[in-house]
Image (cartoon, rainbow, N blue to C red; front, side):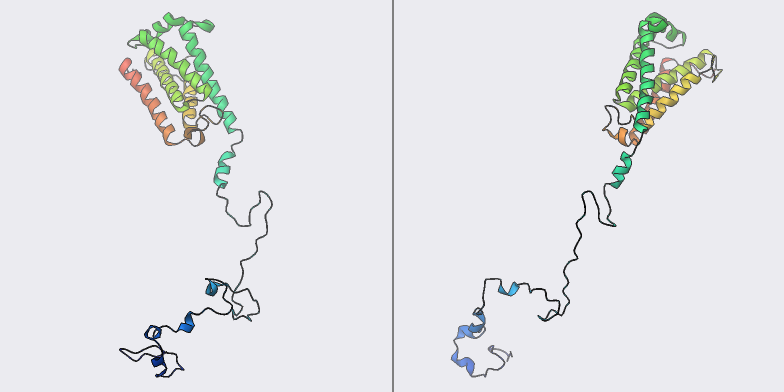
Length: 266
């Protein structure tokens, strides 16, 4: 196919220059024979037919075509060698053993103790002094508004204990218990005029151990055996638990400063 400048016409290589004079103007650019279908025409996509695979290269492929490798079927639950399981980190988290059972026992121990202690203070059960005796002890410790604090402290213990037993709002319940226990230690130290004894019978090892238990529950969460089992602080406690811990400590100190004001160290 050649081109001869302005006004030139297209022609086949073996065609003479005079052959185009016998053709109409509409055939100067396109050969009508090129538009005719082949004798074996089968459809509009004749030229897009995929050649069959010929490993010998007899059809002009040259043996370069290779089919995809055959993958052996895997049994149920099996995986291909070297395949990465995206769910593996989550399965590792599920392997908790007896951890949830231990957290349940820890929650039940502190929760039942708080409920029993609150009932003893408010109703005088199990040899308790009752409501009047509890109010007198709060006043003797130097707290203001002892009449209100009597109900708040007793009711707060019962509420926090029940929430711990149920595993509901566990970090906040343990933080409330922590604030109460901190005030118990500060009141005892202030009553002893700044002398801090750890071991019983005059010491505070019992209160200190309860504080450690409350801090542990705040940080590790309730476990899965509770109403908080699907919450973030039960499956993977972190920022919320640290915030609850700081809230419990700050609440206990603030309660002492604003309602008592005495220096526990003398």
